[in-house]
Length: 240
Image (cartoon, rainbow, N blue to C red; front, side):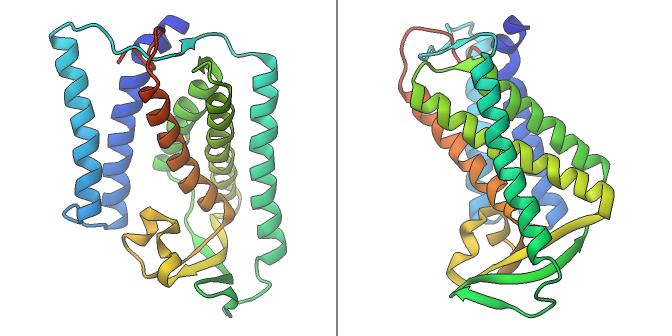
């Protein structure tokens, strides 16, 4: 299993990210010619082409400080506790604030406040695909791969739990209720707190899980970039 992750984790993750980005922008009606979307796909496809060229030329993998190994018990416990924290925050916020404000907005500070809105969005096959992707990328990666830089490993576990557990919560919410309970609104200059939503809407209503998912992904990408820069002898994240 460790050898499989070592060889294929990176390329499977990269192809999955490209597929999910394309699928997400297409289903949400976000134009592919939007400058931000163009930049995202240029970066993703550049990495893919670079990977393929290196494989064709049989170049040595770019090594970074880290290794694939069996997950340790303390890491598993920390991952579960971190994830449950984010999940509980999301669930409690929905229990407390859902239907508390009705259609009325209660501004907490400019651009942010409370607004109760149920988003009809029943569980569909694509939601299951997204969850499987999250399990692959945000469960296997942080538990099985160690950069051996304690702060990076710790933050990677927290960021990944910040994505996976809210994704699980929203999957079950769609299954049980046929949609998602949103309780927070963002607008004006705070719209790009969700880079994905900010591309399409001037204002939108969110739930805490959406915040965790969006920024958890950004943190994971930043951490991977940092760990990649810190190259030292060791195993690469998927033999890149």
